[in-house]
Each structure stands twice: as structure tokens, then as C-alpha cells.
Length: 509
Ligand SMILES: [Zn+2]
Image (cartoon, rainbow, N blue to C red; front, side, top):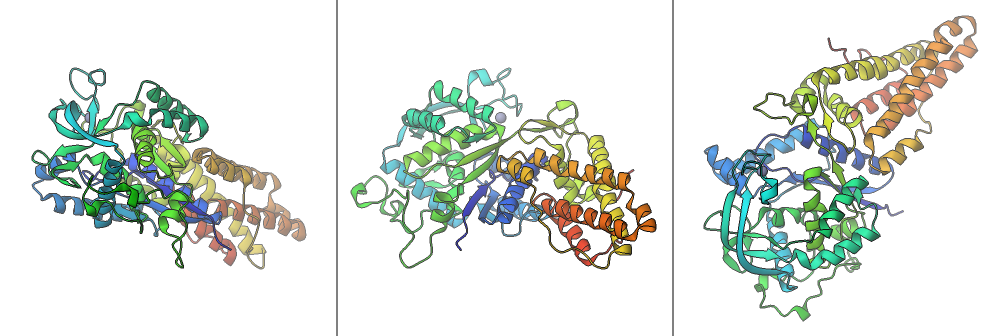
């Protein structure tokens, strides 16, 4: 039987620093949903990668005394290795915005927008924060600086290409009305509605090459490169091989083409004759495309990208899941200057890959900001992994190995409540359900005392132990999307009816 398809993507981090805890959170969450969908029987396409163009990267490379290409290669390679350490699915698709197929797709996307009349040229005057790669309004500045980067914005005054964002105000407004769960959580949806209400302004989508050359060439105009966002956003479909086998506009030169020859609308496009369904059709058109992003990114993903899709008659994203920020102790922004950063790789060093995943998925709020403290992480690890799950596994399997003849292979392991929470992306609550079960089972053992019962009534004792092993198996299997390594380890021990040779999670002092 043909599997249903599912597409999920993270945003692409900029390649100008190692991945921080916020990146780790987004990637591990998306990975958890991808794993969950796979277990549910979906054919999953999971996308991540690196955003490698723009002025910020250009400047960072210069500062590091490296060629830009050498610089982005270094970081792309570092990211890929870091994903492995986060325990991310090995079949994750990794797109680099300097990849040839991406560059080609971005140009084609531009050409189609232009062909439809949604790109025009005008003088652009703006205050621009290179740190944000974003235009700043007067009201967003504090003492004339971008508060996020403590940087005086650059003044841009040049002729640029613009995208007719304003043309999509009504369409987006209606779309938001008709798709009430488009953005999760719901209150982020209201922010976007407010934004639309205030009117969408056309935005600049190119830069003069003479001032900043590190970008994708604008088709048909050698003097301009694309604004990094316009290029980067198209990665969500370039990764799927878009534009597939539809006729290209880009190669014919832009604007001169006769658009009646082009059949651009891909909505509901049939599978290619005699061949397999294209990746784009399978995962973007029919795979409920789902995008994770940070809360500072909602506007780009939820409005700009959707307007761009509308411009070229492509189906819109199915859902956007918005993360809160990961903050330092006391809710203060993590920064090198303050010395309050927590490096995800340090957490892995100390607690292992599943330790990091546990913190992200169980201790961090699914949608709100989370203030992270190293002491609290350690407490949580000791209480719930070393003592909780680790001890429980060891206690149950010690008795099982001693008194039961064989392990247990199969059980109904689905916990409907966990699935419900995962289907609404509330990963923290899904984890809470499982860790509540762990506590309950612990209490059950304390109450029923199988180690005593077995000495006076063997049959009764065995029955108790067997029931506990079965419950442990349910817990272990339901942990698979969250803590894949731990889940597999426990399931295997149960199958072999063996107690762990060493603690699953070492207690930290
Ligand atoms: Zn900034």
C-alpha cells in the first residue's frame, strides 16, 4: 500500500558561527516530529541545511581572513557533523543555498515572479541591520542602534528590485481566515493577522553587486544579486528538485518570454508520465509541508514566503510551528559578552546525545521562551533520567532476568495521549505524559513489592514482574521519537531479558 507522505523542514541557520542551543532546539524538535511521523507510517522528507549568502556572511568571512567559499564550506561541514551529534535522522536532506540546484531554482523562482508582474525596480532607501539582514524602522531602533546587535544600521540608498508584497494583502488575509491552525501556537497567528491589517509594504529583493557581490545573480541583470531572504526562502522547494520538469523561464532571459507558452501552475500537477511522482508533488503538494521557525522569523515564513508562493501559483505551506527563544538564567539573552551561553555540544559532552534531547524536549517549553540554568538541567537529569528512567529500567530488568524465563517481544505500545500532543506539536506535554508513566510505574513497584511477593508466591510474583516489564516496554517504545538511542537500548534489553550492565544514565554530582 502506498504510504502517505509528510514534509518537514527547519529554517536554515546562517553559517557565521557554530550552532547554538536555539538551533539545536529547532532541529531536535523537527527531528522528533519526523521520527514520530515515520513511526506512524508516513513517508517522510526532513529538510535542513545552511543559509550561505548575504552581507553578514561576506563580512564575517572577511573578518576571519578567509575566502567566502572556503568560509561557508567550513561551516556547512561543521553543521553536518553537529547534526549527527544531535542524533538527527541519518536520512535528513541537507540543502546549502550555494548548491547548484538551489541557485538554479532561486533564479527560476525570480524569473516566474517577474514574468507574473510581481517584481519591479525602484529607488530603495532604508536603514538596514546587517546582523538581522533586515530593514529597520525608526521605532525598532534604540538610541539609533539595532537593540539585538547593538549596531548602527547601514544606510541603503540605491536602485533595487522590489517584490510586490502589497498585492497579496487580501489573499493572505483570507488565507489566514480560512486556515485557523496555519500557525502554531495560535497567538503567533494573531500577530501575523495584526501585521497584515497594518498593510504589507513591498520589499527590496536585490542588492547592487558592486557593493555586495556574495549572492545569487539576478536573472537578466548582471548588476544585481538577490537579497539573501528571497534566495534562502526558496530552499524549502529547491530541496525537492523544484521546478521539476516544468519548462524553465530563466534560461530564456527574463521578461522577454511569452508567458502564454508556459504552464506554470503546479497545483495538482499529475505525476510525470510513466515515471514516479516527483519529489515536489509528493512532499510539497501532497505532503502537508510543515515548517519550524523561531518567533523572530514568523513574518518571513508566515507572510513573505507565502506571498512568494502565491506569486508563482504554488500551494502554500500547510503549517508553521513557531519556537520561543532559549534564554540564559533569569530570562536574560544568552551572549558571549555576558558569558551566559550554554553550548549544546558541552551538554552532549556531559550528558550524552539523549541527555541534550531530553532537556530540549522535556524541560524547554514547546512554544514559549525558556530560561535555561545549568543547575536546573543537572537536577532534572538526575531526578528523571539517572534516578527515574535509568533506575526503573535497572530494577525491573534485574528481577525479570532473575525470575522470568524469557523476554517480552511485542506489546501494544501506542499511547494515544502522546500521539495527540505530538500531532499538535506540543512536544513538552507529550514527554510529560511519558515521564508521568515512569513515575507511576515506580510507585506501583514500591507498592506491590514484587521482590517480596516472589519469595512467598512465585506465580503471583512472576505475574507482577511480567506486567512491569510490559509497561516498561510501552514506555521505551513510546520514547523512540524523542530519545531514540535510549529507547532502542531498553527495547533490546527487554527482548534479551537482561539487566543493563551499567547504569543507562550516570548520576552527576
Ligand atoms: Zn540587528
